[in-house]
Length: 308
Image 1 (cartoon, rainbow, N blue to C red):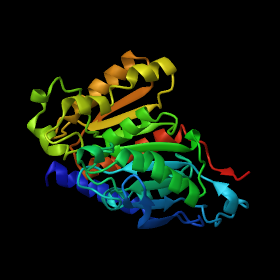
Image 2 (cartoon, rainbow, N blue to C red):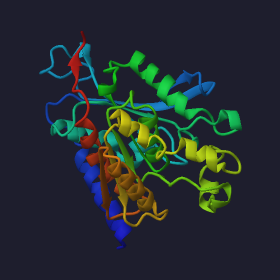
Image 3 (cartoon, rainbow, N blue to C red):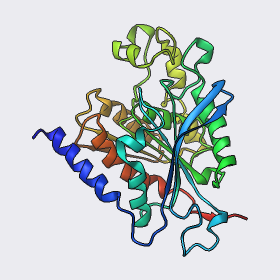
């Protein structure tokens, strides 16, 4: 049996164990592939949502649960993924059930949007995939806060993602520090600034799918990159704490970008943690690492509270 097969088998066993609901506990609920009209995209934006145990007022110990408000964690998918990836690839609903039951994270709503291939930046003006930054930072958050019983404030929101979504989670948290209390990146597709158009790699030309111009405009990429806001965040003392995780066998060598960002943030005196673990750019690793990321994010979120 190969190491990859062993890892996949262990991940499946873990998810099977997590899937068993706690005896007598209220059950969570998942809505897959619902949608709302996004003004920024000019069309519906799909998302899936996990509602934690007790959200529907079924917890016998929470008499006021029908009026209770919950923190929200936004989970972004990678390139080529969609709003169901975290559910189908990692079983994140079962993982959250287990962490909440053990008190390792507060009961929280998980929102998983479809980010297309947009790299979570605005690109409609240059013929790119669309204005995904505005679609999430403005449209989606407003919709979620109006539709679900959320804690509609910075202390009630966190964000994380994998690969393309890891990049997106960091940049959304850094460019909108007023929106998110903490952030996490799993195998984030984080690259240093590109010196010139001639230095754009073939890999980057292939990955970016028009989000930074076709061909890639190095200046546009650098303006949107996660390293740009660091000085301003340090001066304002407003950086959301960040957890970076990545596998040591990542086929895209994304450990390099994670380490470069970690070093830059540490040098600026900003809160960051880096965990490089055994594994590749694969779902078994992310199914393991999301547990620590959810615990990390939960530590910075307001616990559920009664409305009013």
